[in-house]
Length: 381
Image (tube, rainbow, N blue to C red; front, top):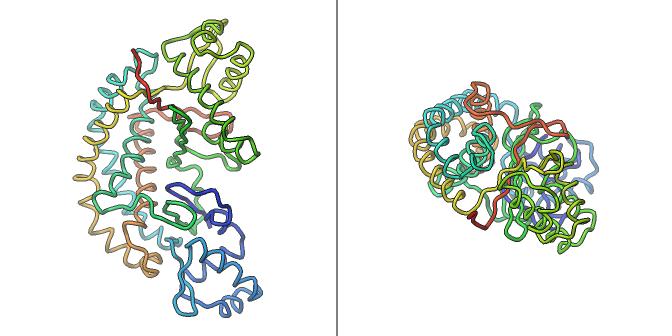
């Protein structure tokens, strides 16, 4: 069973849904109660797992809000789509994805105009460099979460372990290679983003994943925040074009030996590249005016996506969804639509990249493809 999460998880590991659902016996329990509500005694008889262990898993799941009691029995508290569910919904996902891709393809002139308004060309970035960021991340993913205001989608909900929508997919297709994984974290005036595929094992060799790794290893949060703020400042300084290291040290106010160390880390992770004595940034930085231009683009495109891609497909989705396991377990369609929306835009993105409408993000050192960029709460001159 595979799991995906949209939102934010708190710091308590005992309430982390990925951790709670990780043990294979727990997944066996979830698979059974997804088909029909069962009590602990029945689960122990069907699985061969000692009843005391079954009850321990059920307590952990209930504490995290992932199962709901139904008398003495239990059923899932989150959507778990079976292989049969996914097969049933597959044609609808493909049709919706084609509709979304078509809307964006017809409006690539708007995307190109936003690229210009963000002043990316001045900083050496082509539409091939930013197209995936603008379309895949900002329009399809982050913009799609704005559907919450329409009633079609729940972007995140309060859970004991954070604010998120958690989903299980009981199928064989690898979720990691989907174009749906957006990670972000804010440090001072900088938010570091990564969007695209995930490595088969471990975290991305990029931020914010590397900062999360430091935190798990016990590095103090103040030290991490200071490091990330310094890295963001370097990327802003390089946004004006390649600069020698000495000039960077003066502009960033970072001591020379520390700057060399920071540049080495950025180079190792693919954010900057050395060109002789000068350093050049490979990472677009979105300042406040650029963020406003992107927001306007997202609003305009989603008005069309909603009208042409979502509303015409909704009645059919309601019909198909009514026969799925999540529907039988009382999961509202807007909650279950969160992962379905991600599967839809994954296919739409794949179609746009295969057709050459937008360029695929580069393959990174960890073997998978994703885009990197930074938002900055500042303004270029």
